Image: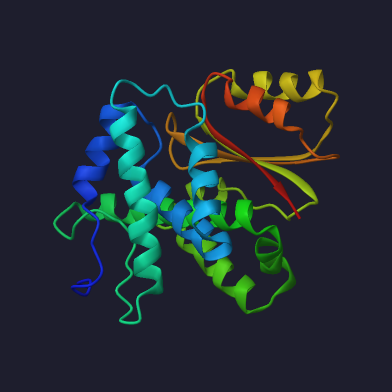
Length: 239
């Protein structure tokens, strides 16, 4: 699909290189999905908050300033494409010349990011995925796409959890030590874990952790979670 002349396009390879140069570990497809989800649910301000949360604990290097400009372009261009009457929007994914496995994986993480963006900007919309309205049906479809490319065993390991009033959505590196540090951090803050769901796409890669807790997680505790070793991003969700 080709954007209209009035709507700028996004360069996947250039933006991916910008992320890598700055030292960001979050995949570009996931970032774009999250931005789009937040844009749909809360507009540009919500998209900027989602990006800030996602990159809050990233050890960005000297190219961080250039990355900031590129991320602002990502928000503004995505917003224009979503609003374009000619329906020029398309997910920011690898080209058709890329290996099929790479394309499928990128689409899956794009959908994961979209769900995260919606959940952080408009919890009521995320809750509708449980209640069964039209928005919920769309979000459930995205959740299914986010499992694309996984074997049956890997798909069974993906996070499947009911929404609770207070939750944490965490992406982490699949290495020993995360669960212990994460649990100890919440316990030290007096926050009790009600349910804990952890899934991964592949051994040693990124994992997704969805945790329901008995009370709201204060911002200072969330900041401690984001600074834990192996944590890529952490977002508090309220339903």
